[in-house]
Each structure stands twice: as structure tokens, then as C-alpha cells.
Length: 350
Length: 169
Image (cartoon, rainbow over the protein chains, first blue to last red):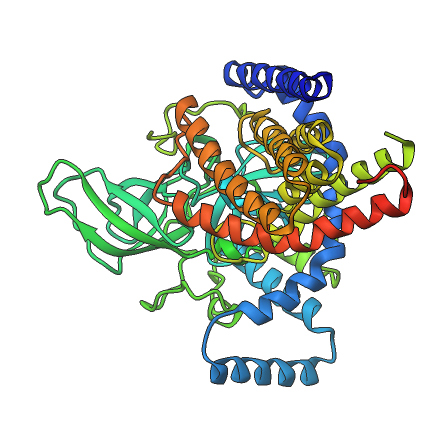
């Protein structure tokens, strides 16, 4: 009898401990005891995650090639262009690809005059946990603090929510709890863009019930107070479907995000918001959607000729090593506290 | 439990957690992320019994709850994995480790983990839980888990036999 009771007692004790952890977590906020524990373990686990990530990156590349969609012909065409590009450059394929991606990303940051620190995704949360979050390989010592905007190729990726000394956690825009103030290109109509938990769909709610809204409209961030958590002018996505008629109390639209989060690798964290609102200047001028994640499509992002040369792009883009973490050249922290920004339209709408 | 066996469990859990966060979740496979950590916990339950299963599940769950970018409730994964390891151990003890029954149990526990996480999340008021996704997640989780279990279970059994030929079942 004793043999069969001992495991049950042990299980009972473990469950009790787990339940009390959950109870503590439910009541605590980020500054509570658990926040401290997570910060410390993050400093230990972050570097381990970083090392494991670089160790596993060849496997990821291999599987990506296998699973990337399209017909055989398309795959062959892609591979052929890849081979040609490699012959031309002589550099290793992965490094070359990432160089291009980083360059395009920095060009985009330059167009909006965002001062950024490039970073690399080193970990992603399991999808059965429902949260859409990633870990980056930069943290407090690189000048990162909570509520900073995270850019990826194409536009807005998310915002920083938790920081340890060498890593930080980003809640992606597609997460079901994410919400950002959005502005329609040109028109200036504003509303809220919310994540749905679905990687390829966002929801846009227009504030003005009679405002013009149609499929194909593009949305940029409205910008929060002091640029936290979202700086203005970052492309979010393109309206694909409008539901509800003009005059209805709420007008909703489906939005396809410009950033493809399933292939997120290199990102840039905005450590200093632009002095002037970049309005629509970060968007690609052509009416064609920029949603395709190919680097060639977004390589056409123009740098406004009149704008002052942004420091981030000139200093960081010149460095050949992509994985190197450029330290910010200035003291990046605006004086505003990273806590709540109740006045901003980017505050949670849920 | 000897030092060798303890070392094996620590290495297996830490390795599985790191692999899951940095590799498996980034492969972009359809549905759920292949839950290597769950399968490793189930393997310890099946090979070393319910007590070890529960203990390893609890520890692995805490690590998964702590490692960035985890955003869930701290302790929830520990709770689920402790129960999973315990159940697997009980089933393996009662049936003597028949392969077919073990794999069916793995599939059932995988479904239970996904549904259980969604249910507790809903009870606690997690705004992220979307029940529309649960059937697809549960199905893929079970498929991936059975495939991984077919590799991990024999591997752990072999390691334990190698470490202590007399003690293992």
C-alpha cells in the first residue's frame, strides 16, 4: 500500500506549490517578487538561449528551405537566383541574406528617423501557450528598456515588455493582447489596431463611424506620448476587408500585417523616437502592397532626401558583422517612465 | 536515485527546454509547437515511475515558465507537466510498458495538456485563450508528441539500462 500512496502525496505537494505560484503571479505585477525572479533567471537563461540559438540556426535554415511554400518551379527559381547571388557575392549565403535584411531594416529606420539598436530573435514561445512573444539578444546593458517599439522588415513587429541585462521579451503585434493606435495613410483617420492571436490577421477599429475606409488602405502607427510604447509613423499593415457600413457604431476592418512574424529573425528596437512625426514617409510610395517579406521588395524604401543622415544607419550598416550588437552611441533613455501612458491612443483598448 | 540518473534528468530537461524555445518553436510547423519537454517528462514517468515523472514534470514546467519569452502564469506549466508525468508513470506501471498503450497514453495526455491549459487560462481570465484554435492545437500536439515519444522513450530506457543494469525495469 505504501508504494502506491507515496507518489500521490508527492504529486499533491507539487500541485499545491504550483497552485500557490499561480496565485502569487495572479496578484503580482511586473515589479512584484516574481518579476524580480524572472529578471534574474532571464539574465541566466538568456545567454544560454542565445548560445543554443546560434547552435541550432543551421538546422532552422535547412527546415525553412524544406517547408517554405510554393510549387517546385518556384522553389527551383528561388534556389537559382540564390545560387547566382552567391556566385556574384562570394559571401556565405546566410550572412549575405542577413546583411541585406539588416540593411533594409536600417534604411527603413532612417526614413522614419528612428534611432535603433539591431537585434536578433533567439527564442519564440510555444504556440500552445497562446501568447505571441519572442526573446531578443539585447537587454538593459544595450540601452533597452520596457515599452520600446520593435521594428522588423516591413514595419511594426511589437513592443518590449520585459528586460533583463542581456535579453528582452517582445510581445508581438499579432498577440491577442496587443493594441496600437493606427492612422490611415494620407487621410489621417485614426483608430485602434489589435492583435487577434492569428499570425496573418489584425483587427482595425475606426474611431469615426463615417470615416472613409476601404480595402487597400494602409495603416501606420499614430504614436504614443513620448514614443512609448509605440513611436509614430511605423507601417502596420494593409486593410483587406471592411465589415460594417458607414454610420455604424463601430467600423471594423481586417488588416494584413506588413511584418511576417513566422519568419522573424532580425529586428530593430527603437531607443529614441523621432523628433518630428514622420507621417507617411516610412511607407513605400508605390500603391503596391509591401506585405511580401522578400528583401528585394522592401529594398526600394526611399530615404527622404531632405532628412538629416540618421546615425543608426551610417554607423551600424557599415559594420560587416551582422550578429554584432552595436552599442548605442548616445544615452537613449527619454526621461518619461516606461510605465503607463494613459493619455496615448496606444494604451490597451481591451 | 543515483547521481548518474539525476544528472541525466537535469541534462535532458535543460536540453529539451532550450531546444524547444530556440529551435522547435521557430520551425514554423503547422499547429502546436512540437512539445519535446512534455515528451521528455512523459519518458521519465514511463521509465522511472510516477514519482520521478511528477518531479521532473514540475521542474521542467517551472523552467519553461521562467525562460524568456514565457508570458503565461508562473506555475501553470509546472502544474500541467507534473500531472502529465505522474499519469504516464501510473499507466506504465499498471500496464508494464506495452508500446501501443504507451503511445496512446502519450496522445491522450497531449490533448489533455492543450485543453487543460486553455481551460485554466479561461478560468483565470487570460484574454489570449482562443478556443477556436484548441482542436487544431490538440491534434497537432498529439501527433508531434507520439512521433517524438517513439524516439525519446527508447533512448531514455537505453540510457538507464546503461547506467544501472540491475535497477531499471
